[in-house]
Image 1 (spheres, rainbow, N blue to C red):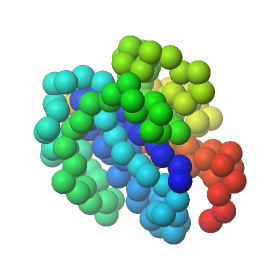
Image 2: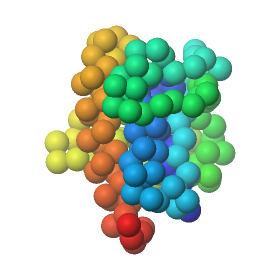
Image 3: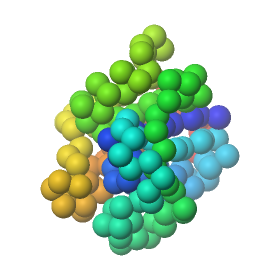
Length: 156
């Protein structure tokens, strides 16, 4: 089983969007039993809070429903539990490394590092551009999934 953890600052916008977009992609490919997908925060600010309503609404526009997801925090022990720890931006990676300590197995990546034009995913909490965030995350999840399928030799 391949285990992927998406991480952002508060775990109420970008990382849960990535979690549920990836779950939708995997489900549509019939690969649900081969993956475990989750998301977490690097901060304590939103712990216990649900997915931010505009993020939930943007996912719903694309036919993706969000279960009873509440924000949780990344823990040092998550390094051993997951194969891929995926941040949304460089600042997330910096904060992830403060929590994790080291990355000897090269599990830590930025989501859009898997696409042809690597970049950060801007935080829609500040920009209000949830549609753009959705598009960027979908692009990153598609590229990450292709990378995993190739690297881990999983057949569809």
